[in-house]
Image 1 (cartoon, rainbow, N blue to C red):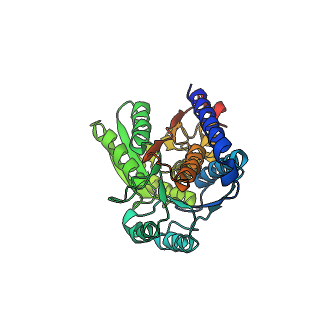
Image 2 (image 1 turned 45 degrees about the vertical axis):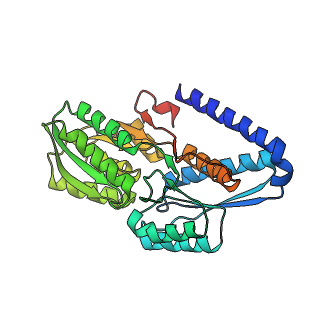
Image 3 (image 1 turned 180 degrees about the vertical axis):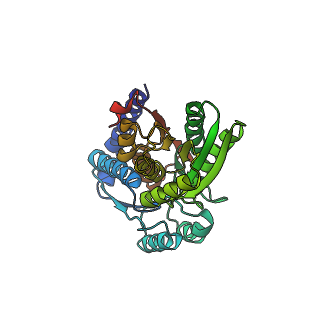
Length: 316
């Protein structure tokens, strides 16, 4: 049903773009648009977002005749300083819009304000943005996403057991809120105890090392919940190496190919996933609309899906 609804939405959008193009094609064909996308870090989840952004750029170009470029530049590590440097370089080139996933709303504030002062529109990926700046957001309710995953883990453990939470980047508000909302679910179950919290900084290898260390320190561990897309992969690899696949329950976040493969193997039970390709698509559509003087929603919710053994074949 969700995919059918999505197809209908995209069909309506295509009609709208076609209608616009029939009246503005002559003017727009002379225009060039350049949108800069700066994610948190080099990561396959953001690669999917970039694919959606490039798809939207191609659609606008096909329907209007305008030249549309999406410049995608990711920090090599989850470093606020490196991300700010990329953003500053982008601002100096005066793009039509900047789209970014904030590593630290406080640490990113000055550079984002600089962009706005130069009248460069800024949108943020799957985040609450920066207080008082009213930045448009494309994403989903990541608290609900995390709570769906946490409730599934509670169900797998029959309401009792020791669990651990893997944080992503602690300063990233979406990662922090996922962890907070997962913990809130566990707090409602008196026989569920959170015995450890790891931090992977959006790195699969770090998540694997952290998970291995936590499982060694807590041999009684029954379950895992991550707060980002790297977490379930690293946790799953550590659980496999420990020979505890199926014994320690894992419910993931997001739908990277390695996560889906681990679900198929039975290492991960299931995952609560956002839709990064769709997010990237709507970011560029929204940025293009703003570049043409249109008002856009402050928040576009692209939803999330729950993937387990029952529907894994639909996503592989």
